[in-house]
Length: 140
Image: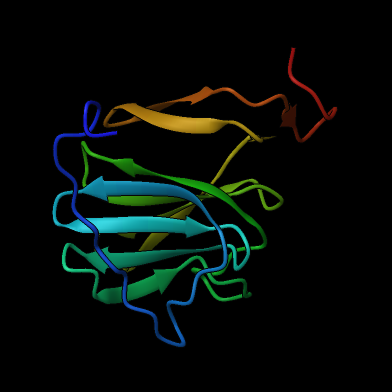
């Protein structure tokens, strides 16, 4: 193992009632934050680089920032914001890097694909197997 990894750091993440995680699906490091998507709770936990829990986003609710079903998330490095994808509601929910709600945007389709930001106003879907629109259940 030493021939492949020269150095590593172990960082325990703070566990609180609000930050308990069951199984992570995606971890992103951006600026001075760690973003962890937990597929059991369908939430994104935000930690600082010391492992201290800052906030949890993506709660299911009818509130303006509430979601039906969190499917994935990405970081928009062009506008420094977090984007959560609500699969069943077909919405992208935008937050600041600190987890403050900004706005929701309707999506004309639902997809099980991952997304990557390409420019300030463009992201691309990669991988996955489904891409469905609202009218006829498929694109193509």
